Length: 260
Image (cartoon, rainbow, N blue to C red; front, side, top):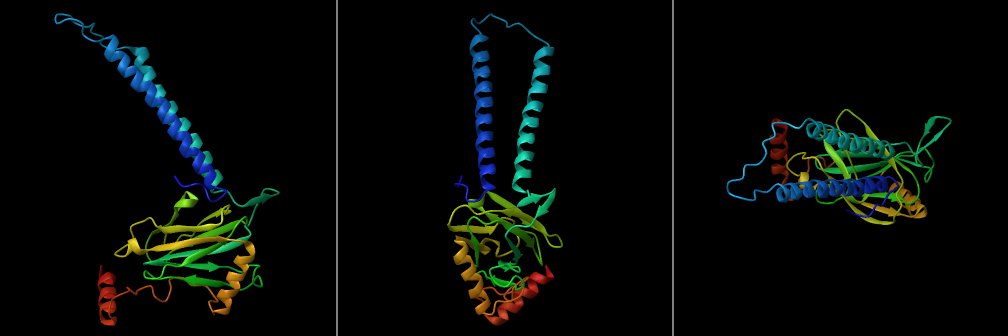
């Protein structure tokens, strides 16, 4: 498992290792009982007939209650970690507080666009974006040590936003805005991809995540503004473009997919 690269990833990391430790303990206990029973109650002579036990109520109760307890314990820790991972950035007087930055992630067939909404690094009212294609993966740039509110949007089919280094994955569902908050804790470049089969070029629906200093993040947003990437991109102008196909083939491929 990758080393956690966000504040929320540590909770998942600890749950994963705790589950493996619990599984190992239970496995050793079960294997030990099996080996003990196989050795202690083995047949010692050809004419020996073992004691025939029709039922053992205490053992049957144990075999029923023990798995239920195990499942309930795992369920408790899983729900606890889920709540920690999906918790808002902060809370004041019982009310949720927005993160330092608002980003809208749009998953479309078959790439991504990233909208940086009204960021203080600009004037607090300007939206800028970057978008990719199957042949040119986009980069999601994030500031280290600052909280990020992410909203997931899809204009076509279900996708799934997954960054393995963040130990986190969430579905991108048409007609529904899923959201989560996190704070990057490590600088670097990380791989991201769609984790939900979404059509022909699903395997090429890739992106990069680059975590930089807050100063470099502000510079990046200003560069997007200077390039004219102002506004909100939901779908991308190349949503129906398949790199490597001739224009006529583009139209034929799009028509075929629409018919399907």
